[in-house]
Structure formats: C-alpha cells, structure tokens
Amino acid sequence: MSLPPEYAQLAGRRIFVTGAAGFIGGALLRRLAGYGLDVTGSVLEPREVERLRSQGYRAVLLDLASDGPWDELLAGVDVVFHVAALFQEVDASDEAYELVNHRAALELARAAERCGVTRFVHCSTVGVHGHVKEIPATERTPFNPMDVYHKTKLAGEVAILEFGRSLSADGMVVTVNRPAMVYGPGDLRMLKLFRSILSGRFRMIGSGRTLAHLGYIEDQTESFLLQAVAPRDRVHGEAFNIASGEPLTLNEVAASIADAGGVRLSKLRIPLAPVYAAAVVCEAVCRPLGIRPPLFPRRVGFFSHDRAFDLTKAAQRLGYESRWDHVRGIAATIAWYRERGLIPAESGEGRRRRSGTAAQ
Image (cartoon, rainbow, N blue to C red; front, side, top):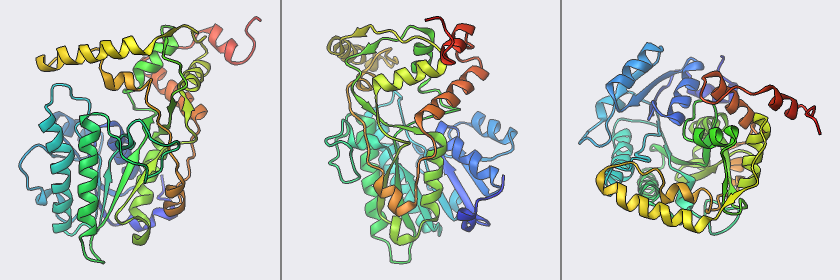
C-alpha cells in the first residue's frame, strides 16, 4: 500500500518499534512496513526474532530488563515508537515492573537522544487515570493508577516527559500516547470475553452500567503515526488519550458482541462484591507461589471501574479522528477470530437472528 501524503515526511527515515511481538507493537510494525518504510522491530525472545524475520520484517533483540546501553540498536534511527512494557506478568515482582516500565523506559529515551533520534513516541496507557475521577476524563484529569502496572507506567510517562522538557528547543521531540482498551484482529487479550459471550456462557458481573472506552487497533496505529509527524509545538512534552468512538456501558459492549455474533445474551447477573473478594484472595494465594491466578482484582476491575475519555486534545493537536465505531470493529474482530478457529463458526440460527428473519 502506498504511503499516505500526510505521512510523507516519514519516507527515507529509519524507524524503530519496541514491543513488535505484541499486539499493538506488531500492528504498528506491519503498518509501517506495509507503507514500504524503513522500520525495525525489537522483541524479547530469539524465537520472536526468527518469526518476524521469516515473515519478511527486520527484527532485533531488546531486553529492557538488561543493563544496556542500547545505543548500538538506536544508531542512525530517526523515530522511536516505544511500545514494549511489562504487562500482566503475575510472577514478576514489583521491582521488575518498576525496572522495565519506568527506569528502562527513561533510559531508552536518553539513549535515543544521545543517538540523534529526532522523535520519541512513548506508549503509556489511559490506565494512569484508573477508575476515572471525572467523566469523560481529559489528559488533565487527576491520576488514579490502580495497580503496579499502571503505577509504573505512570512513573515512566512522567519521567520521560520531564526529560523531554529538559531538552533544548531544537532537541528530540518527546510525546506520549495513552491507548484505551485496544482490540481488533490480532488481539488475544479480549478473546476470553468474546468467546464467553458467543458461547452463551457469559454472565454480567455487577450492573453492567460501568463505562468502557474501546480503541480499535487501526485507530490506535493511526494515532501513533499522527504523533510522529505533527509539528513540534503541538506534541512536544504532551500526552494524548486515544480511543475509538464514544464510551459504552458494559451492557452495550456485551450486547454488541452478541448481536454481531448472532447469539442471545443471558440476562442473568452475578453480584460484584463476592467476586471481587474472591479475586483478592485468589491473587494473594497464587502470586507468592508464582502461579497465574484464574481470577484477580484487575480483571474484576473491568466490571467496576469507569473508563471514558475526552478525545478533544488529540483531535485538535493531532488531527486524530476515530474511523472505527464499535459495531464495525467488533464485527471485524469476530470475523478474525472465526477465520482462525478461535471461536465457533456462526450457526444458521445466528445468521437468521442477525438478519431479522428468526421466528418471533
């Protein structure tokens, strides 16, 4: 595919994407490479290097938990998208999260500046706002991180922005992207939710009135590219909340998945309080043993913590505009899951129900 005119300035520039084996980093790598740009992705494991190279991509090893320095990897690079992070690793210590998501992220930014990188786009998370204190939350809404992942991502974001603001007026441009709940083809994190709903086993925990703000993967990668080319005075030292469309209640999310998949959604609900209490106990028992708990507070928080964001700043400074509403995005995600056998194929009854021809 041809490079869109709005990204023409990326042509001829060397681009580096960390976390290229992950969902978001991998999607960004594929999009940049698809435009014919000079891009290299970094990954943590040798097998991931081999997999990406076998698919025709350039890939190198980068372990953010190592001592570094990483100057050799960044020599000659013009643009860095730092997407890699330690996430949902229950056997990792708090210190490991602090090392990777805070100290190493800052050191990578410093190495980029030493190597002459002109733009550093750091991927944080809207989770720095936690259970949002105002709806919709803006970039200035007070921080409210809820767990070690969000706390260390916040520490990394703050440190990187402070470092960027300390640079000279013509120095490296530093900007932060805060993705919402990103989903779409390639995502396996939300597969459990989709599979549960489409199998008929799903039961809403709590009222279902909690707000969620989804971010379709194509919109997310678009926002990264916009940050890479926006004028310095619009993005340097700034963070941007990114999502798709409007926030939805969990009832609306579940109903949309059920409708797109052609299934009936159960009206039965499970009380929130006992599930959260069980999650706290489960994590307390499993984590010291290095066992991934089947239930933990962060997962239950999906049903209790409001997440809704004002995207005005991204629209005004980046020209960001969501192109994927939840109806199209959910349908495309289900199609991708079904193509790979991750969820059952749609039944004839489901197709009739979606087309409105099921018996009344």
